[in-house]
Image 1 (spheres, one colour):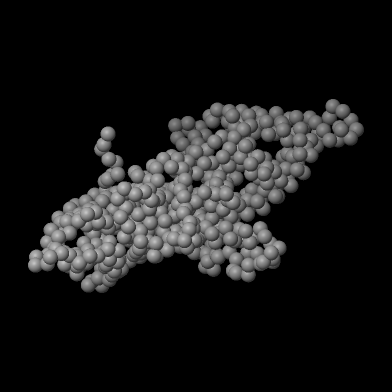
Image 2 (spheres, rainbow, N blue to C red):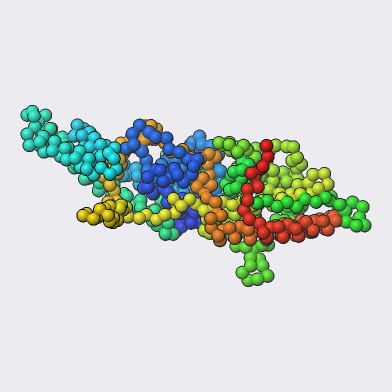
Length: 543
């Protein structure tokens, strides 16, 4: 076997995520919220309950397990491209969070074997008391839970004082109820130490710190380290796949990865020769596209010092149509592709091809802005087509809003509202332990099963990601709830539309086309877009 001596895990030295959206999604790997907080962030996600609630994962555990399996799995389906974030950084943080939890679970497994399995009868009684408390009515959990634990404590004292039998078995009965409480104290310290570490990484990401993911398992230490080589290649393949220029549109869902289409403008007029010319000089749609690309590339400059567009990116894309309810996408291969990207020559042929009545991908020129630290991904797609003697130029606006709020909150000390003693008409907020008794029990019981993920899923349930899956688009909301985002979307559309029209008219003039009607139509569209507002152009009112 040949050994690949290329660099290992490509981890930024300063650890700084590319955008705030990357940091927000990465923080999901370290969160300790209930799983329900993750499920409600996207209505297409779901949790299938397992055999027992004590084995159920929390927010961070379910997020890591699902994302790693979906992005690095050996037989995974293609991923939707994630714009505005670096998916590899998110996955690396998931790998680091899993590594931290595995170290914790190793220690908890040892505690469970020593203090739990060796004293199994007593452990089952204590677990029964905790389960009885959990199943009690919320208003009476303290009362019933306290009684159940008091009963276990009485049994422990009675057995320690006067066991029913003598000999070696009698000695075992004296201590059988003491193993679980001692193990619980040890386990609590372990859980607390790792909870502090996980929360520190969570808080650092949200605060914009420079704590990056450390994934030593992705750096091969020798030719025989096949596991690390495989992980490194998977991470490299993930980064390469996210550079694809072959996208998919799913009707009202919009272009997957770009969000829904919120507006569309069309310039369509007949190609007539200008006065005094017998016929126009032939040209291809690609000629118009290239001129538009040149004009868009100059939009980062302005006659005014601060008038240029920042963070502008112009790219050619092939976009294929799939069903709105499709649960996966395909990634074509062949001589037209270089890895996951369609070659430039193939894109040129696609732009010049007559696609009327034909299935398959179509060419689009995209101009994209990643704004608000990754919170808004604004894309305007331009398509140029000719049918008979009519030139049609369509500009469509797509917007991908901010990351769901469940990924942007900072870690807070746990607290609860209680009634003041002696004043039932007043309440107060008190801090609760960072790691509760129930959480210690849950983590310790889960720990021995974490080495067999399929069994743990059967016991605790599974978390389902939305398909087709993209890390950014799965947890993105609409931008229209933010006034500044809405203003920037509509403002950029006008500037792009005028640049497109100006470029198109230049090409038409050079090829002896009468541009009077094109100029009139462009003026009407310019006035129309000044009063535009977000709409639903793909919700057709048809039978």
